[in-house]
Amino acid sequence: MAAPFPPFEGRLGRLRAHEPADFAPLAALFSDPEVLEGITAPMPESAAEHQRWIERIRGSEHEIRLVIDRLEDRRTMGACGLHDIDPATRRAELGIWLGRPYWDAGYGTDAVRTLCRYGFRFLNLQRIGLDLVATNERARRAYEKVGFTPEGTRRRFEFVGGAHVDSLMMGLLVEEFIDDV
Image (cartoon, rainbow, N blue to C red):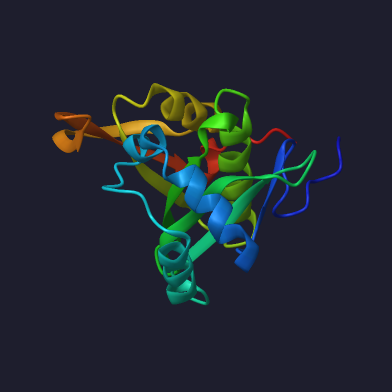
C-alpha cells in the first residue's frame, strides 16, 4: 500500500491558503468567459475584489477556500473550497474552478479528490454535496470519477450563454468516496 498523501496534496496538485501574490493571477484566470459560464458567475472579478472576499471569509468555521497549484511547477491553476460546513450534521458543499489552460488534464479531478479526502478524513464529514450547470459535462465527469452521484435536477435553474439551463445536484457519502491512494 502506498504511503498516504499529505492532507492537501494529490497526485497532480496541492491545495493551499491564499497569499497576496495569488490575487492577480487568479483574477486573470477567473475572468475568462468560459470559466465564468461553467460556474455561473455573473461577471469577472478584480484582484482587489477577490482579495476582499477571501479576507472576509478567512477564519470562518463554515468555509474553507484554497488555491490549487500544479505540483510540477507550483503554478496557480484555480481555486476550490468547502462551504456551508455544518459540524452538527457533518456535511458541506464543494465548489471548484480551474483556469482554461488546465482543463482536460486531470487537475480538476485531482483537486476534487484531494478536497474530499480532507473533508472526510480531517473534518469528519459524512456528506459533501455540490451543484453544477447540467451542461458542464467536463465537471460532471470529474465529480463522478471521485464518486459523486446525481441526486436531482432543478429545471431551468441557471441562465448561461443566453439560455436557461438545468442545475444538477450531486452528492457524495464518505463510504462512496473513490480515493486513489
